Length: 309
Ligand SMILES: Nc1ncnc2c1ncn2[C@@H]1O[C@H](COP(=O)(O)OP(=O)(O)OP(=O)(O)O)[C@@H](O)[C@H]1O
Image (cartoon, rainbow, N blue to C red; front, side):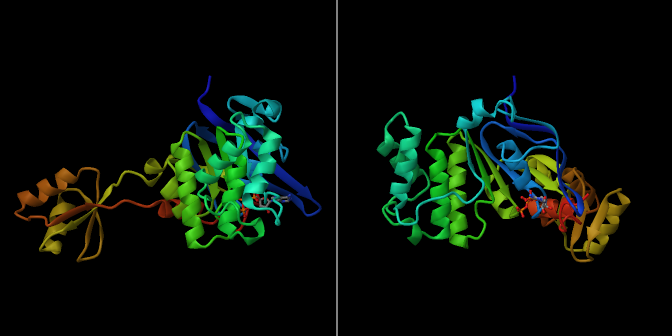
C-alpha cells in the first residue's frame, strides 16, 4: 500500500530528431503525498510539462516507471483517470457561450450525481467566478479563462488536480486569484500538483515541493525543510569588533561586515553565553532564514539553458 498519489521511478524521456537526442527528463523519482499542494518547480525547459504529459498518457516514457494512486501508468490509466483532473494545454471552450453554458455542456457529458446545475454552481463558486458565470467566454480575462479551465476539471470531483503553469501570462491580480483558488482546493483535501517556475507562487501556496533542473530532481520535501532550519544568526552588539574576536576565539564561524556580525551556528544560546561571559550584551540575535528563491537559484544554477544532456 502507498499513500503516494504520484510516484515515478527512474523516469526518462528522450526526444530524438535529426539533430540528435535531447534528454528532457532523466532519472526522475517524483513522490507526491496525498493532500495539500505540491509544487513542481523548475526553470523553463526543465522537463515539467514533459513529465506531466507522461503521467497523463499524453507522451510515452523512454524508460522508468510511473504510478498514480498506486496503479502503474500508462497500463492502468483507464482505471484511475477519472480521479485525475488536469489543466495542461489550453482547454477548448466556445467563445460565444457564457462560462456557465460551457460548464453545463461539459457537466452533461459527465453526469454528476447531484445534478448538472448543482455541480456547475459548486465549481463556479469554488473558483470564484460567481457573478461572472453568465458573461461570454470571449469577454473573460486570462485569469477568468484559467479559472474556468480549473472549474471544468473540478466537475468530475478529482482527487488529484494537475495544473501546469496555471498563472502563465496572468497579471498580478489574476495570479493572486488563481493562487487563492489553488490554496483552497489544497485545504479541501484535493491533492494538487502545481507546476511552476515562479518561486513566490510555490512558496506561498505549497506545503511540499520538488525542484527539478535539466530533467533531474534536485531537491524534494516539505517547503519548510527545503528552505532549511536557519543556521545563521545576525548579532547586534555595541562593539562588533570586540564581539567578533570573542566569538572567533570561542570557535564560532563568522561572516558579515565589520558592522554586521553573522554567526553560522545551530547553538544560539552558546553565542549569548560567550558574549555575556565577556561582558558584552546583545541587543539583537535574529535567525536568518533562506527563502525558496535562494535555494532554487543555488540548486538550478547553470540550468537556465535547457534540458540537453
Ligand atoms: N516534442 C518535443 N520534441 C523535442 N523536444 C522537446 C519536445 N517537448 C519538449 N522538448 C524539450 O524537452 C525539454 C523539456 O521541456 P518541457 O516543456 O517539459 O519543460 P518545462 O519545464 O515544462 O518548461 P516550460 O515551463 O518552458 O514549458 C526542453 O528542452 C524542450 O525543448
